[in-house]
Length: 226
Image 1 (tube, one colour):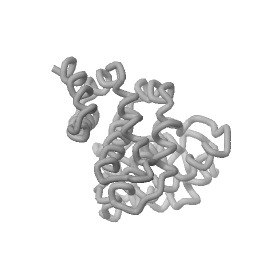
Image 2 (cartoon, one colour; image 1 turned 45 degrees about the vertical axis):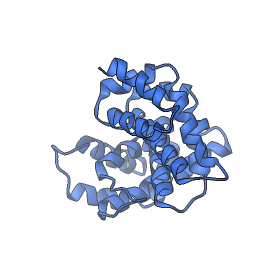
Image 3 (cartoon, rainbow, N blue to C red; image 1 turned 60 degrees about the vertical axis):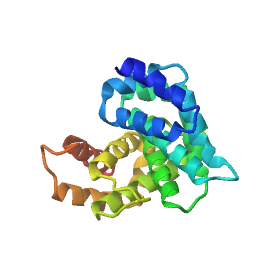
Image 4 (tube, rainbow, N blue to C red; image 1 turned 90 degrees about the horizontal axis):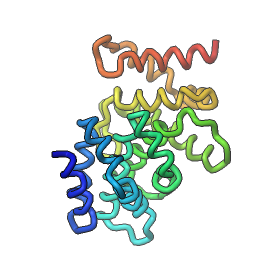
């Protein structure tokens, strides 16, 4: 059962199998809401993934470390889609201690680009409606917004970002979180979001994934400037 599997997988993350264990937990978080809750409630799990995420700042970065960091950020991205669990991640300082280092890290590989994309969207889910209080957070927010809008463009063109195919609907949710904060709306528009939204609306399906989220995002942005 999930109740016993999550602690067992957590113990595996202290071994050479940590990436395999992390991928299993990532899949659980992506497809099972109950698993997300159990993961956050498992003592030490959030801290373990924070440690995996920050290994991307290593000066001697290996492919294994990069993979581990990407997996950890991916888990946080899945968990951040639940408002209740997002608050737990904020209180655990995931933004400051995992996402910020990921967004500031340098790199050129596909794995790095994928991690940057996931970190940007996770940042949007966790802080989109929080007022910016300092220059560092403002910089990270700006990076997250620009990256998320760019990912949507790639998704609509059917292009891979960082070796990953992102579905447009999966990007609308974090964009809505960013647009919820009036401070972010001008930059979202400045980054070219409105033409991309117009393309989404052209193919809009009322029964599609996040159909209402797409309309809400369009209404939020257009109403801000009228």
